[in-house]
Amino acid sequence: MTILVTGGAGYIGSQMAYQLVDSGERVVVLDNLSTGFDWAIPPGVPAVVGDVGDARLLDALMAEHRVRAILHFAASVVVPESVADPLRYYRNNTVNSRSLIEAAVRGGVEHFIFSSTAAVYGEPSKIPVAEDAPPRPMSPYGSSKLMAEIMLRDAAQAHGFRYMILRYFNVAGADPRLRTGQSTRGATHLIKVAVETALGLRPKLEIFGTDYPTPDGTCIRDYIHVGDLAAAHSDALRYLRDGGESLTLNCGYGRGFSVLEVIDAVKRASGVDFRVDFAARRPGDPTRIVAAADKARALLGWQPRLGDLSTIVAHALAWERKRMALGSGQAHAG
Image 1 (cartoon, helix red, strand yellow):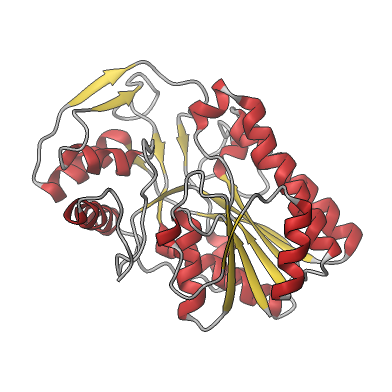
Image 2: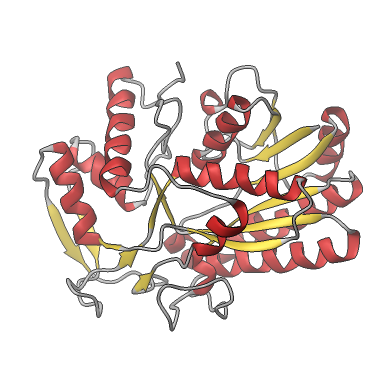
């Protein structure tokens, strides 16, 4: 049985591909390389350059590789960009996911794991936010993912395959072995931006909003290490293979850090007191979002091992330094 990893040349998808290969799984990657990198795909893994909305390509790929499970990471993920260009997000995240789900049905796929997001919750009325909280997305990004969730649930019920929807909180860090990490040009993730600023790759860091109703006035997020997130997917796949029911689960640690706390952590780890400017709030940003993550631990047996903020920041710094040392803006595995 082969596992198809869509978006497997991207940040999270490449980490997942490495973890699957490490555990002896057969993997094939599909990525259009719009934001991913071919060097991020594990050596020896078959890679197809193409779009998850291409039905003919999907049918051929799944037949050739005898795909029986799909881990779907391919998506556009920048909240402010989704506000500015919502139709692009509904195409990439919703329409293309429909095509992939339909191809999975035609190809007899048994298990489907979907990369969703805490953005489906919007501004939750209760913190930590549990999986049964009513979804109220504040951005087209969150809405596009929620629509894909609904399609996946309905299709699974109609066609008899099982799924896992994993709602990520804020993903950060890098592969502890530094084989892959966040490399997207112009990335907007806070830890990534702070690390680049500390290393002189950006002139300054902007904080968007200092008047939120939080202890220090900045937004609070639940940061999860990309390695622990990949482990949650492996646990989810094992759960489904063992006959587990379809589920929707949060992937976070259940604690939050403010923007200022994260910046302080990066300054301490790097030893650099870099420039920080203050700017207005961005549309689509909730005040505070922290996961209720007990279900993933209880049902999947997920045991996070990289959850300290200092560990997340240290791995992000090490990855960025590796990229700088290579001098090409990339960091080839090895």
